[in-house]
Length: 325
Ligand SMILES: Cc1cc2nc3c(=O)[nH]c(=O)nc-3n(C[C@H](O)[C@H](O)[C@H](O)COP(=O)(O)OP(=O)(O)OC[C@H]3O[C@@H](n4cnc5c(N)ncnc54)[C@H](O)[C@@H]3O)c2cc1C
Image (tube, rainbow, N blue to C red; front, side):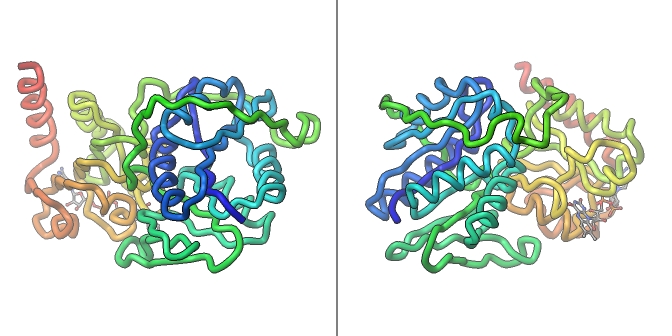
């Protein structure tokens, strides 16, 4: 077994932020092991993104370009990855702890009957084994986990690793064929809804989130206005999602998205442990809550005690004024 692989997500011909972060983490691990770093790119029209992987510093690129790989479907991607692993026996594979990365890594681990470490936030190498630090008990504890022997299949959280920087390198892409044809795949993608223009929650550096305190769907308007003023993504607590005020895609927390922005502004959110599980690694947390005893204040870097319907519009106006200067 030898080599470190990173499975790279991409969109519109460019490597996604998590892809750059995986290459950054993979480079460190590959250097420590003294083994090459290989990027895997599957999809349709992937040549540009595959070339970009060399620029970010990988040693080799294996790519598959086919209609069947246009949308990420685990039943098409899984057999392709598992087949490659059987043939070439890499030591370590990293994927993003994203919806797609989790799906593919779990499928591949089950298919290959190997272990899987999910949600890594730090990696170190000890001899030939990668030690992964991951949050457990809703982020209350950090556990160091290893897969002793065999393939080490690991997913890494977004925004936990420094992204690889362009190096100016280029190289020759190795093209491989998909292993299943369209008629062998039972799931079809029939519609795609574009969220272009919206800031992705997991990649966002700033998030403004609303909870039950916003009081209804219309209560998200001031939250969205503040987010727009400062180029932030919008998030929500499960209480707001369960009430039907905002779609599930926006939910932050244990059963929603895990985010790690530079700034997280929690508006009308009490700070339940399940919500904290998804946002406690934010670098700066600002809580806006009218209850000064709300648990969110124990976690917050800054707290503003008061009514969000007074404070949030005031922040929007002030940010607008200062950013317009
Ligand atoms: C298995 C499981 C998984 C879960 N997963 C998640 C998850 O992924 N994400 C998640 O968020 N929750 C999750 N929960 C739910 C969690 O336990 C809480 O119920 C939820 O986070 C509460 O949401 P909230 O803070 O918006 O609502 P509340 O706890 O009701 O808090 C509302 C807050 O708003 C404040 N407020 C009210 N009006 C105003 C105002 N005008 N101005 C300022 N402040 C105001 C109140 O003082 C209060 O602190 C999960 C629960 C379970 C059991």
